[in-house]
Amino acid sequence: MFGLPGECSCPECSADDFDPQRLINELVAAAGDLVESEDPLDAELAGAAFVSIGEAAGEAFEEALVGGFIPQFEARASTEAIAMLLAIGSVTEGRVRRAASAATERLVAAGVPQPRWAAELNEPVTLTDCWRLVDTQETASMLTCLFRRAGRSHTVVINVNHGDCGAADEILLFPMDQLATTLEMIQADTRDSGVEITKEALDPAELRWQVETALDARAVHDSDERELGTADAPGDDDDLPGYRTLAALMRARISVLPASSKPPAAHGAGDGRDAGRTVVEMLAQLAGNGGSPFGALAPMLPRGRATVATLPAKRKKSDGVALVYQIKVQLRGAKPPIWRRLEVPADINLARLHTIIQVAFDWYDGHLHVFQTPYGEFGVADAELGHRAEAPVTLEQVAPHVRSKIRYTYDFGDDWEHDILVEKVLDRDETASCPRCTGGRRAAPPEDCGGIWGYADLMEVLADPAHPEHEDKLEWLGLDDAEQFDPAGFDAAEVTKALSHLH
Image (cartoon, rainbow, N blue to C red):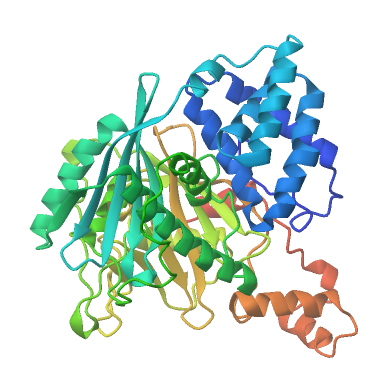
C-alpha cells in the first residue's frame, strides 16, 4: 500500500528478520504521497488498506494498533504521521478511533501541520441514492450507493452472488459521473442477452442490512480459506484498491447508518441455488474488473450449458495502432507469490500470449492449456471440452479495460492456474522491445512436479538431505546438489532476452 515496492517483505516471504521500527518508518515515509493528495477519500482507502491487513488477527490487531502503531506514529511527530493517524481513525471505531484522534490532537496542539485534506475528512459523509439491481432469476444482484462529502461524490457498487450464500463477489469504486453511463450500458447489454434487470430503491437501513449480509458471508468464506491455506494474499492488486480494502471502507461507511429492524441473516440463508453468476456482473467488467477471480463468469443454464457475453469486435486498421498492456501474470496458490509483469501489445492474439507466458514461466508447452474469459474458453479448439480457437482472438477483446482479469490454465493434470490482470494501458514506445518482462518474483516450479501442492512437497524433500526421496528428486531434476535449484531466482532481463528470440 501507499506505493511501497510490490514484493512482500514479511518474515514468511523473506529471509530478513522482522524489524517493527523499520516498518513504522517505511509507513510514515510512504505516507508522504498521501500528504500531497487532494481528496480525503485517498486517506480513507489508505486506512482501510492498513486495517484490512490485520483483520484476521481480530482483537490482537486492535491491541497492536492502540498499544503499538498509534503511539509509534505519534512519536514521529510529522505531517506524514498525522496522515497515518487520520487514515486509521477514518475507518475504525471505538478505542482505536479514540486513540488515533487523541494522538492527532496532541500533535496538532504541539504545532505539527496537518495535511490540507484533514478538515475535509472531518466533514460528514452523506448517503443519497441507494439501489439494488437484480436479474429476474435472482441469481446475482448489485448494491449501489452514492456518497457525498464537501462537494465531492463517488459511488460504491457491490456485486452479490446469490448462488454463493449471498456473499459479496467484488466491490467497485466509481466516480459519480461514470455510473449512469455504465448502468445504461449494462441495461442495453443484458436486454440484448435476453436477461431483464429490475431496479429497486433502498432506504439506508435496508442498504446497511444488505451490505452487512453480503460482507459477513464473504468474511466467513475468506476465514474458511485461510484455515485451509487457500486464501489469496492481500495486496495482490498493487496500487489498486482490492476487495479487502473496499470492504473495510464500506464497513466504516455503513456503521453510521440506521440499523434495520430485521435480524441479521444466517449464513447461507439465501435460496441456495447453484445457478452461478449472470450477466449482471458485466458491470464489473465495464468498470475494468470482473466480479470473480477471472472476470465475469458465465451463468450456468439448464443441462450445464454456459451462456457467455458476446465477444467484442476485433480492432480494425482504421482504429490505429494498438496500445501496450502492462499485465501481471500470477501463479495461483503459490506461497511466497510467483508472478511476472509483462508488457505486450493490446491486440496480441491469445495463441501468441500463451507462448509468451510459457517463456516467462519457463514452461515447456508440453500440455494442453486454456484461457478462461467472460466471453468463453479459448485454447486449442476442442468441441468436447468446449474450447474455441484462440488464435483469432486478441487480448484486448477478452480483457478490454484496466483491471480486467482472465485466467490461464496450463496442464490439466497439474493445473497450473495463472491470474492475468491488466494493470495499465501504456502508449507504444517504439524504442522499447515488446513483449518484454519488467518485473516478477521467484522461479516457476519445475514442470510435472504435481501442481502447486506437489511443488510444496518437492521443496520439503530438497530441503531435507535425510529424506528418503531426496536423491531421487535430485536425479529427476538433473541436479547434483539441492543448492543448484534456487526457488527465489528470477531475472526480468533474462526473460526479456528469451522473449526477444520468439518469432
